Picture 1 (cartoon, rainbow, N blue to C red):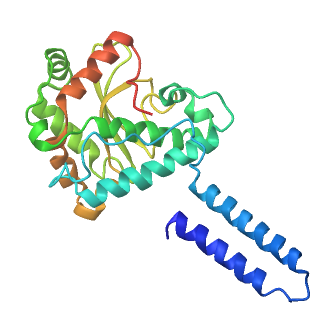
Picture 2: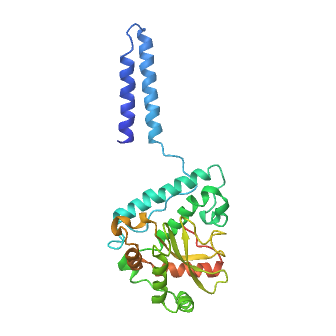
Picture 3: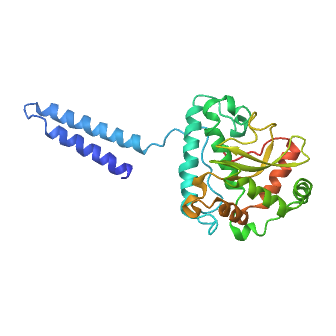
Length: 270
């Protein structure tokens, strides 16, 4: 039901209540009563029409349509994942940080394990914002390129791109990362090697205490069931294998360059 319809219903219900009042009241009192009801109904309608107070964080719009990653990631999954799941993390981190000075969500990651709801809700917001922007439609993804800098690090760390993908897929398998979580390619603290890691739930390598050292993600995949179940059901390995078709290597290369230059995590649209 639309906000306008709800407002009209409120006015009509109020008016019906007014007309059901015993007719012993004075005529002018009846007019005043009906006027008050209409005023309250108008105020109620205005309240529905007014936008909710903006929180510090918002779900960023996708850079492509919900169906743009088909056939590898289906449109219903993308819409539910983006609007509902990511939306819930944003609502909860806004609630947790209400009344505090807003800061980029990246700045909350380091100490998230000690910050209560920031760990799950803040991590969920950062991880998803990161995830959306590293993907692009398959026809565009096929034209993106791995930078010389990133290629050198892949060869040094894994031997080849094919070997990196094989290890990534093995680390993403249900037996290797049980339950919900993420798998990441990160730049290490020294900035001279890539590391393959998995994290549970909405943790990420930027959070102190999650891994042996803080690392800086440049590529990551969501392996929670909500990311793939409508299309792939229990076939997580198939989802991960197909996901390479929508990875934007220009963006991943940019992430790598940013991390090495700044020795910091990649900022996201928050």
